[in-house]
Image 1: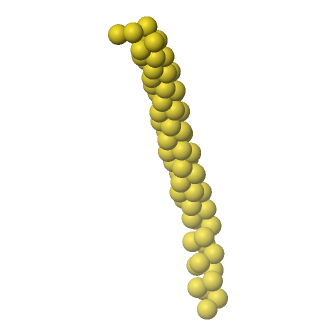
Image 2: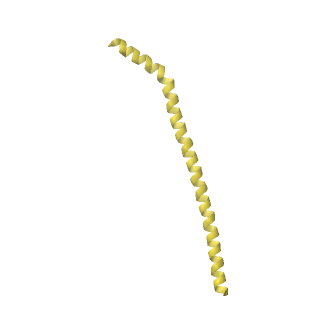
Image 3: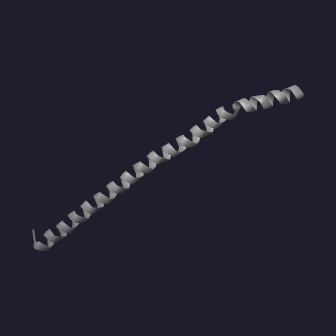
Length: 70
């Protein structure tokens, strides 16, 4: 192997290692993003369900009042 080929091979190896590190970073960021999106939507859906159960007695009272008017 000539010195020029060896140098090119070493440059290619360094670039490959750098690309692998960048890809791992991107993958880690993607996983964190997915996790936090799931938590975000769970909080939104959970608070909507909680609000419904909190307001349900008032809605039932209004429905009964409306039914008695009819």
